[in-house]
Length: 57
Image 1 (cartoon, one colour):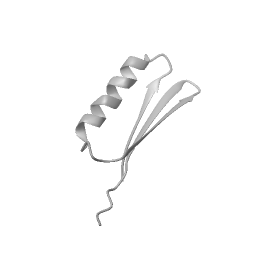
Image 2: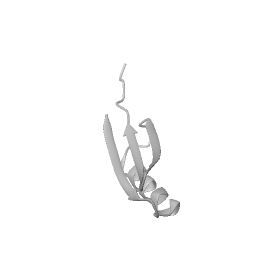
Image 3: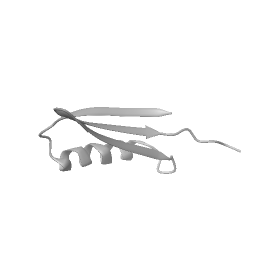
Image 4: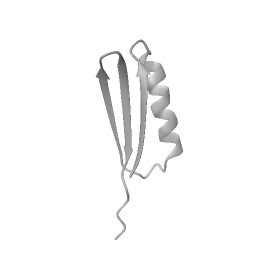
């Protein structure tokens, strides 16, 4: 599993955060399963993107 995590200032616009998420999604394989978590904490915004491992049968 790969994990991408980034902190943004509280005043960062959502468009900037969305641009970061789109950039990360471009770097991974489109067939990978992805979980995106967004958390607003005191004074900051946190984005956590988890790319799950593939299971080959």
